[in-house]
Length: 171
Image (cartoon, rainbow, N blue to C red; front, side, top):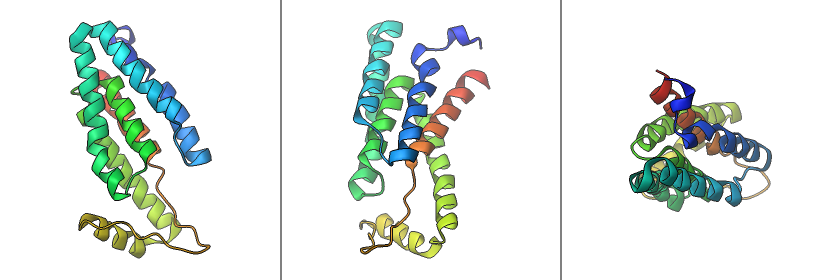
């Protein structure tokens, strides 16, 4: 597929994701201005490229992208920036491309979590926290001077979303 036939929002998706990855690595947070801009741009591009149907696709993508991450955010497994970033990705890629973006994001997040878990030497405590979350509890936060490593999930969102877009338009 030629690049000129790609939807504008999908074509520009790597730009905010690079900023999100940089911010996630450097500051351990994803700025609100970035995620809000992604949502507004995705909805606007949907309206411009697909009239009202395109706007609806972008809005459904936003709702599904953020909605799937909402329970995990409420349980403490994900941060609010991750939820808003996935909602922004959903708005930019639209419906139904948000579904493979979510699936690939989850796979990338699993790989990233395993890497962080092994790298930090916290395999058993991480598995115990996963068990608590799976059975409706909250992850145990360690008190004291020792910092518990966290997964920079914005990286997984970027990798999974970009892979889904690449696979959809170039494979």
